[in-house]
Every structure is written in C-alpha cells, then in structure tokens.
Length: 188
Length: 188
DNA sequence: GTCTATAAAGCGATAGAC
DNA sequence: GTCTATCGCTTTATAGAC
Image: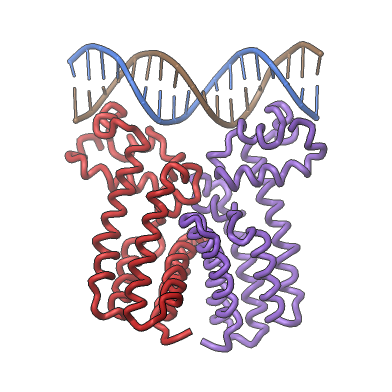
C-alpha cells in the first residue's frame, strides 16, 4: 500500500477513519501506519506534533466540512423547511446512514476529551447556533428554537450510538425521519 | 485510602467510576489502584482475569441494576404512564441529571467494543423490549411502540453525549422532559 | 490479602542512513 | 521523503516476600 498517498491532504481522510474506528487512544501509530502505508518516519515528517497533531488536523478538517456543507447552507437559507431537509440529507450522507460514527462524539466521551474539549464544544455550539437561527427564522420563539435545535443534535448522536450498540443502522434512518418531523412541526 | 475497601463487592462501584471517567482503554491499572487504594497484587487477587474481568463484572453489575430498577418495574407495571414517569425519574437519578456518563454507551463507541459487543447489545435490546412492551400495553401499535422505545433510548444516550460535549447538563433535563412528552403522547 | 519488584510487550517519539 | 533501529516510558501481568 506504500506510495498510495502522494499528498499530505490525502492523508487526513485515512487518519480520520482510523480515529473513528479505534478512538484516539486505540488509534496506535502501528494502526495508522498500516492504514496509510507510511512508516513512522514519514508520519512524523508530515506531523511533527505526532498523534495529537494528527487528531487536531482531522478535527479541523471535519470542522471545515461541516462549516461548508451544513452551517453555511443553514445560514444562507431563505426557505427554513427546505434548509432543514437538506441538512438532514447531508447528515445522513456524512454518517453513511448510521454506519459511520461521529468522531467528535467519540472524542467527547473518550479519555482524551480534555485535550480537545474546546474544539468539541465549539463544533456542537456552532451547529446548535446555525440550526436554532434557521428555526427562529421559520417563526419559532428563541427558546423553542434552541430546544428543538439541541434535540436534533442529540438525536443524531444518540441514533449513532444506539445503531452501533444494537448493530442495526435502521435505527438511524428512523431517528432522522422522526427528528425531521419534530423540527418541522408547527408548534409545541 | 488503603484498607477503605473491605469487601470485593465494594470494589465494583469504584471500578465503574474509573471506567466511566476514562473509558476502558484510558482506565489504567495505576488509575484503578489509585481509586481503590489497592496495589496491583490485590487487584489481581480479586480479578485474576485482569482489566477485562473487571470491566465484565462492572457491566454485569450495571446490568443487574437496570434489571431490578428499570426493566422489572416496567414489566410489572399496571399503569403504563406512571411506569414511564418512574423510569425517567430512575434514569435521571442514575445518570445524575446528566453529570454521569453511560458506561455501556462509552464502551459501544470505544476500541474495546468488540470484546463486549454481546453484553452491550443485550443491555439495549432488553431495555428496548421492556419499554416497547409497556408502550404496547398503553394502547400503541407494535410498530409505534418499538419506534418510540428506540427513540427514548437514543434520546438518553444522545443527551448524555451532548451534555458532556457542551459541558451543559441542562441539555439532559430538557431532553428527558421532551422525551417524556413524546412517550406519553396520544398518537403519531 | 497486600505489598514491592520485575518481567514482557507495546506505546509514542527520535535519530540517522539513504 | 521514507526507511530501520532504537530510546525511554507506560502498560498489563506475574513472582515472591511478608
């Protein structure tokens, strides 16, 4: 598998999958080397800061992806209902209908949580803000908008956990459908 | 802190908190020794199987607690609405209103997931069955009952993840209130 | 039962040849 | 840039004195 990675940027998605599958602690340099086809020398050439830098850059890339594909579309939306539907579609695609885990959530629960606490908090806080804002624009009160927004975020995380625990990804699809209905519901 | 533990049974709750706080991988023998006041010699005297046995026994104890305090009351209930309200109260108490994490969920997301996969799946499946059955008794169809039951389980897990990630336990309380309303709602 | 000492393996990280 | 070899540390686990 060596030499299959030509650019540094090509490395991050590979690293991301290793962290997703094994967590931060479980993602050993041996595993990372295996997944990328690179030896430790090369790895440290690209990431002088070692594993911590790798995880930080992976989290940054995830952040960027959500910024572009989720947060910005939410902000720019003129049709709230449609924006929400598209967010859910993007989320379903990103998490592969419940087969792919959320690295941010995994890190939030893991032993390395303190190291990345700010990044983790920021990720969810920005998502929460973006979604609450679009909900507010659809006519909901600020408090209801924030409540529904947090409900959606937690539903996504919980659906991923339960789908993995039960080894049944249909849980995720059902949860996304239920969540969409709650998000678009008229009142409380 | 040495000698504070007289019985083997007194050990399990302490171990459980270490696993909760650091995950399975992050819970080193040094940390466990610190939390229990016991040296490695004593630890291996009680748990010849080492860390894996410790975690397995902790999971069994958690299983027992939920069996007695959640699943059985759900089965025996003659008033579904009241049984659900009491389940939520027990859950809120167990998870300390969102301050205490779910070890089963942590393990489901961690690197050690395969080792404990059966136990994890069984825990959620039994909870799901117990809750769906009481929902069914309240007049819901089988499919709606199972859908709502899974929704409740995933809401609890997601609320714990988001509460920890945002470092805001009020998320958990709000989620429990919302979940209760959905569980007790008349129809879909 | 509890301790200290230690073994054996794996970890992240570094050095230096090429 | 990539490799191999290796350092120093931590890990789980064991041995044996008390």
